[in-house]
Length: 169
Image 1 (tube, rainbow, N blue to C red):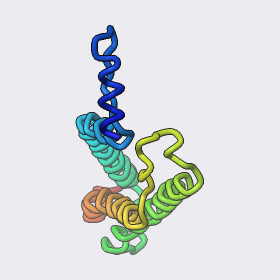
Image 2: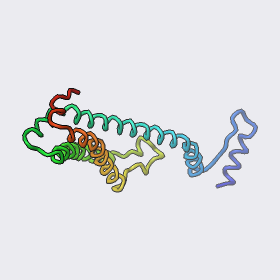
Image 3: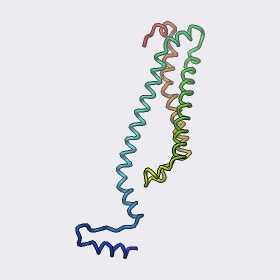
Image 4: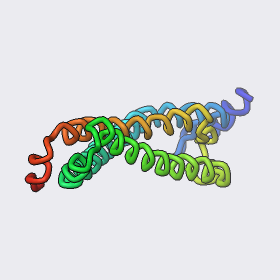
């Protein structure tokens, strides 16, 4: 193989378009080394998107709790304790994140199970999420939902009946 490569390169050495003959494996290795910077760039973009989604989710969940302070006042007036009220909000967030995570992770597993991604990205034949990745994503989504609502639920559940009924947000 190296002798054939040298012969082909020697034939085109003194022409306007000299060649550099290499095996397919060498070509793929050089192509992947060129993608090193692109991979880091893509990881940065994915990280920024994930962080912005984290902020949007936390904001939406805490806003949902704050907008219902009058409901908290009403619940306290009819006898609900602050722990039960806080757990109602956390339970609602848990239910929403379970449904969302199931749809998201299940959809990703279905798409990657049905679609051969290597048809669209030829050098990324190993672009299939593993069960561990899907599980970690599912758990991270649930933790995000619960953590995003926990502080707001605790804060709102500690309001007195009068404060909760008077507050307009």
